[in-house]
Length: 201
Image (cartoon, rainbow, N blue to C red; front, side, top):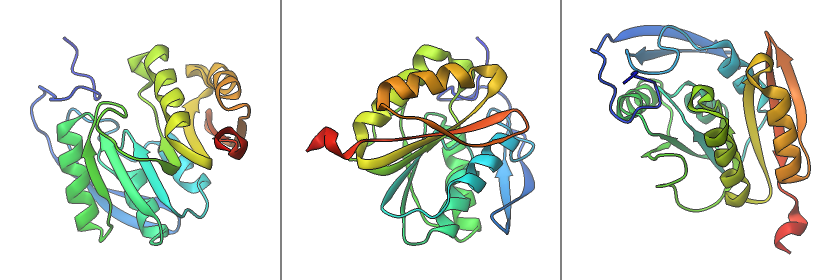
């Protein structure tokens, strides 16, 4: 069975390394390992996602956090927000906890397959979805995010054009009633949908 980064317990041998990543005017150091997404660097899609988020407040979920770069940068840039980070990959979660601590960032880190073990509602859900897991799975994540957002809350995703950004945009427009491409770069699209306040009136 292939050892994908969205596996709960990666079987690949550990190969830890330290990398440096820059975003939002910050330079952070992270520990990564084999069996996690983008182990050699902060991938360009995640960097564009981080840079596109703007100021955040309230309860924020980094869904599929991996080794923690998105959550760490957003936590440091938005100390007023309550960051929750989740992933199914136990190795990635261990790295995320260590990376938060090492960079002086604070967030709640939860082991969860999608939204399965995540409680409550959110003002923002941010995700670089596991494209290789298939369209059905990632669209179900988008649909559940819509259910778990507070009125006026937003889902922001990053997806490459060649890996289905136009169809994801269409799906989000159908689910939320709105979707906007707020940034593009290097073949990546940042798409944001806002949950209508009238839906829970």
